[in-house]
Length: 485
Image 1: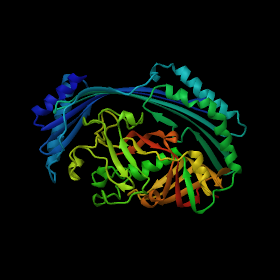
Image 2: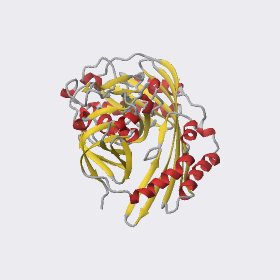
Image 3: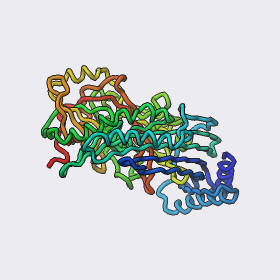
Image 4: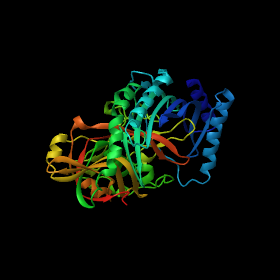
C-alpha cells in the first residue's frame, strides 16, 4: 500500500505542495444485535481508500478516493493541491506547524482472538443466550443485546519521510433491559449504557464480560426500579461510579480542552469552549486531588484513544490536563500548537476513515486514581446518593453548565448502601463540580471505559475515545429527579 502513498506524495510535490501526507486505510466492520429473541442487526462491511492533505500557498487542501490506480491516486493528489491553492485566495495568514521528526515504524495493539475469525453463529448464540436470560424475568418489556467489531489497518506517509503502518483491532458488547409500566420507562444496562464496553482488544473482551451471566440481574433491576422511591431533590453529596464519571470527564473536560474548539476553528458539532487561552496555567479547574491526563500510549491501557502514531505522524503522548487541580494542558496538533507556543504537537489528530480529514480528537482522557478503597469511601460517607450508569446528558455549547441523569441510584446512610432510588439526576457548573471532589478510589477500582460514538466535525466523524476513572465523591451537588412525574 505504501506505493500508493508514495505516488500521492510525489504528485503533490510536483504540483507545488510544500508539505503533504497521505493515508491508505483498510477498514472492516461487523455489527450484530438482537431484540426480544430476534436478530436485529447482522451487518459486515469493508472499505479501502486513500486520503491526502496538501499544504500549498500557505493553505490546506484535502481530497480522498477509493480508486487505487495510478491515475486515480494522481488525480486525488492533484485535487488536494488545487483545493489548497483555491483556499489560499481567501486566507488570513499562512498555516504554520511545529517541527516533527520522520518515523519509519509498525505498530499493532495486542489481542488474543480475532473477532472476525469467530463464526457469526457463535457470536449470535452468545447474544441470544443473554437475550433469553433477560426475557426469563417476568414482566420485562424489551431485551436488547449488541456486539461491534472494528479492524483498521493504515499506511501513513509524509513528505518529511515518515512511513508508518498501524493495525488496530477494536471489540465491544453490551446488553440493555427495558421495562415499560403504565407511563413509566425504566432501563438497566451492562456493563455500560449506549453499547456497553469497548476497547482495543479481541473477542476475549466479549467473553470476559459474561453477558449471559449478568442478564438476569440487569432485567430484575429494571423491573425493581418501578417500585423504588424517587431520588430526592436538593443539595447533596453524591458518589459517581466509574462509567458515569467517565462520561462526566468526556463532556466537561475532554471536549473543552480540544484546542481547535478554543481557537474557533471547530464549532460545527457541539460548539466551542469556555477554556480560553488566558486560563492555561491559571484556572483552578478542580480540587487538589484531581489529576487528569490525555494519554494515547499503550501503557495507559487498551482504550479507544490508544495508538502508536496519530494521523499526522506524531508519536502517541501523555499530556497533563489537570495537575493538582490546576488547568495545565490542551489537546493540540502540529498547527494549533503554534498558537500556544508549544515546541511540539500533542499528537491528537485522527480521522474516522480514509475519506475524512484528520482533526483534533480526544485520546484517552482519564482521571488518575486516588487512594481510597471503595468500601472505606462508603463507610466514610454519612449521607449521600450513589449514581450508576448514564441515562442522559445535556451540556451547553461552551461545556460549562450541565445536567446528567443515571439509570439507577442508591441511598448511602451512615456508611452503608441502603435502598434503591429511581430517576436520579444531578447538575452543576464544570469548575464548581470538579472543585467539589474530595475523594477518589484507588487503582484497584479504576476502569478504562470506551466511548465508541463521539461525534465531531462537519461532515461529522464518529470516533472512539477512552476514559479511565474510579468511583469518586463530590460534595454539595444539586440533585434532582429526572423523568419524574
